[in-house]
Image (cartoon, rainbow, N blue to C red; front, side, top):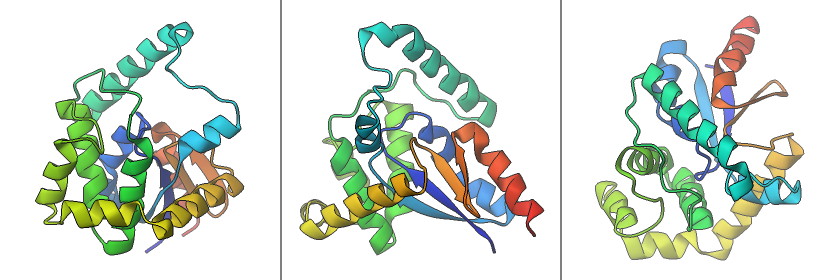
Length: 199
């Protein structure tokens, strides 16, 4: 099975669309996906790229929410737009994803986090949402948070972010196969076509 590298940050709005359909697409297409959490916020700050939050970008922000809603409905999802944004616990949410990928529960955590964020209005890595997700995953909240805030996870988070940047990643979601970079949920199918053309 061929694998696509999937680079993402919890906090990216369009990543909701990808996370919500990736497992099903993986089955349909017979492809694997390597999930890599990183800090898109750090990369965007390094690039002096401020996204949708300033009042001067209200027109663009309004378009983003409507665009996500349209695309979500076309996929059969039912988000409540707008979702809480930007995240107050961006780094913690992504460090938890790093830890989870190391321990085997990361994908379930990310999917549940996005579903709750966009469909129930529950902000990632905040209470009581975080406790509820970790309880669903049968994990000890205090232990998990302590591990997520450890120097080891901080180091891995930074390494992932630096690697993403070195590969040409500047946004989330990004898909990479055979050195080709595809940015945005609407480019996932283009990446899949490339994979199939290389079979």
